[in-house]
Image (cartoon, rainbow, N blue to C red):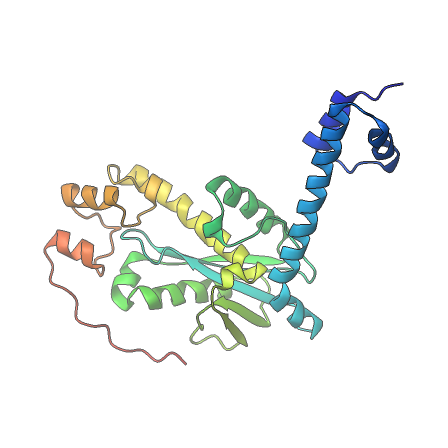
Length: 270
């Protein structure tokens, strides 16, 4: 009796179910092109799964070293929204239970919006604890964007339901947080926890900017999220600045006819 290739394609290719060995053996004996196509698709999926497993092992090397040493609550921390002309800066902190893996998690900048949204739901459901923190526009203009980013990250860490024992952070140090910290350059591409935090920060801020687009129409905030793209700068010149525009940023100051700011005072980084 011939195998029903249409049903097998639906089950093992489209739905991605594991291929039973007896069916795989039968497909190998089947000379039809459709049988070979199913086997080829399953082989590709197996290769991709192995590659993803290797990528995740590499992405977890910082966490795994800490877990193996007995440090179980490791928080990854990252921010989003440092460069935009408008809106607050957002940060997130994520703690995973030892051994957690979430396929697809990566630096948020490498993912499209739909994939970020999908992964954000899974990260929140899987994480031992997660938190989002903000620094508002007024704070950005008062202390500068760098320290506002630090403030948002500190608030994210402080908002965690479980206190972390160690922090992995993207190339920064959290001032006034008395915890062991490891600054990792390009950490959102090297640590699963930091990458997950980058996704939560990015999706949270993007969602807020879409809401602000309704409140402040005409600037295209839904599409560019406040970044200084040509569309946004043109709207800023035509319409002027809103209360959510960062008045410490040179482009906004120029539109408002304000003089350049003097250099920010140096703050201690320890």
